[in-house]
Image 1 (cartoon, each protein chain N blue to C red):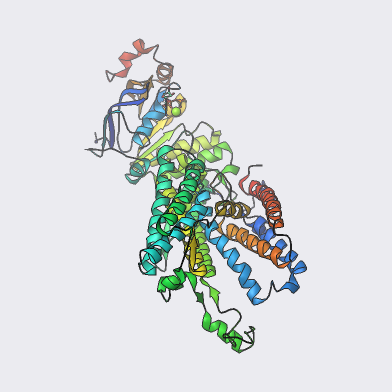
Image 2: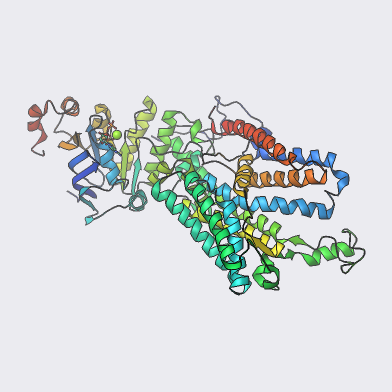
Length: 373
Length: 259
Ligand SMILES: Nc1ncnc2c1ncn2[C@@H]1O[C@H](COP(=O)(O)OP(=O)(O)OP(=O)(O)O)[C@@H](O)[C@H]1O
Ligand SMILES: [Mg+2]
């Protein structure tokens, strides 16, 4: 029964394809092209504006990092076959929870932040539980959460402070270790050294004279990188990653093969909530305040990043690296137009165009990979 | 004779008002190939899904290795050593062959204490097991969606045969296969059986059933028509029985009172 199949032999029914082509045809290709394109574009039109000076780079890197943090969660969730439209509301909610717990209740900042994570992930789990139990599309369930959470956030904020903005978070978090982990900067020593050896410009006057223009890498960026690396390894290199693909590709088939689909999906809803709270915590620590209207439309922007990154809206296919590139495109375009002095409304035009181009290209690439055509 | 490794008694399965199974009993011994036959809609797939943990029986008892057992989901059945090729194959078209092959049973290797998916092992085993069944893959990372129907079926069979430690259930595994691949699958069933695995084989093809079956159970409209051992029944009689039991009266004698 065993046949001797020489696996090294060339199969006459397969056309030889070049190594380069094989290497290029991957889900991230569309996003990679887009990234290069916007880079070249803004290098051409905005080079003299300071966009590519150290503080300019920091500026759009932070924006890209913000998108990347929520896109990472949305990406794994979408590959697992579900949506979360409540990401934006969750950002506002978590921020207000941190502010209320630290400023109003007076808890230490680290406890307030951990508290927000616990509450947010519990809500994420509940979203997932509802989706699994009712069998309703997550689109509908989380659309409900979008409104419920936003409403609750505003109500809670007004109930406790009579305002929709809670300030004083900066003072409350002064010197707190977890607060610094979200709002601080990393590699300060390295950047000071850069300044000392003259690679990095320094402030010439004022209280910060002699200090580098860019004090270090903002924690928002560190978080983005950590989350991207974690999610990428989880998805492509672990058993659980295979379960994520399987759950989104065909939940029934995955169940038959013994994949704990419900657990996978609920965990991904929780991970998305986690990412939204990372975003919220970093933003609250950076601004020193929380506002009930933060995070509006972020859910859609996260989904756009993910789709530009090559993921399939119906699940089972996608790439974290692609989503991260989608976020980078976002950051560059949004800040680049600002640097170039363009009308800010053009940002949306640009986005829509990129989204459309990205999706068309991605569909074509995916069909090559998966043989849909 | 040895004890049956898995035994189902008086299994009933209702889907709302539909009575898919109305009291079916069947036991499979280690090293035995038990063929399950019957018309379309007879309840064969529903029955094996009760064995594989997909459905929980409305009524009836399952005994596994001599003890009462209730599989809450397929994962529990797989953990107990029961693996299944479903009629719809349970494959994920967007995923690679190797990822499909090891879905739910991913091999792991530790790097700095962290368990990672052992892709090298998965790729090697997949290619090897597919070659064993006579299918030459372009590569283990080929998406299942790019395979032909029969190739896909072969992946499902190779997967189940590889992981079926104690019981292997095959729901019409040869329906889309070519001549050579079919004989490879029948040979695989034979080899797996000789390893002491209990095989449940659903087919509409009497010749296939007769080629490897040790016992034959015919289902009709959710009920067992009877069980016969090889040698007690000719392929022609089996054929008649599968047609729905019209010839049952004539057959009763040859069934040896097992009805
Ligand atoms: N989930 C379900 N809900 C309702 N009815 C069902 C369900 N699954 C199966 N049935 C019904 O149970 C009966 C038996 O179906 P089953 O799939 O077990 O047949 P089968 O013997 O495998 O047929 P085939 O040879 O065509 O594969 C059919 O009448 C079918 O309509
Ligand atoms: Mg069937």
